[in-house]
Length: 247
Image 1 (spheres, one colour):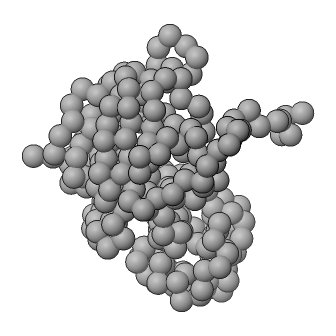
Image 2 (image 1 turned 120 degrees about the vertical axis):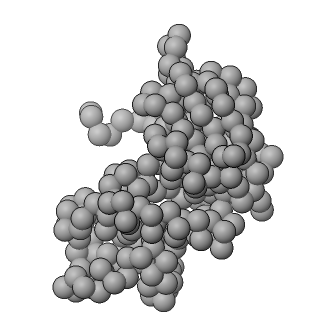
């Protein structure tokens, strides 16, 4: 009864396949309060150009994670609209929407499988050379080869055999392999030490440029957002209080 609940969020009748030739994203008069009178997001208007990096900043409860969940369509929007490439995401199939969106979270979801299977998770037709290339881009290849078993090594439940930084780099390699045009980064560097944070910031910069990703980078750290983003959006109580280039 707990696990086998029916799906409440289903595709609309006649839902279309989302086609993404350029990943520009528009949030139009977006409001979502989880059925309550307050909380969530209130009348949000944001335009993200294809290939642009947005730094989304705000305290806990400001609405940052809610915005990502609505973009992934984990909930139906209460009012307003989200468009990708001019298409209303509520009218697209959920599978086709999420096929275009990669995500690296603060606590990455790794499985009790091999390193290789975790990197290629969700994209089984990936060649071995692509897995290795992605691991190298994410600065994960060296520590993977140092593990007994290398890419065949099981990382344990939730990646327990790896450190926090190693788990994040495997998750980043997974996002690189998926090669999706939209990338959501939710506090991706929070488990890393200062040196590795600096190195990974440079790596994310390079990946975003090389792959022309449209990126939403969520962080509590305004300084980090300003160093990472083309445009910074500051949220407070579900509303935009400042938006503009870092300068």
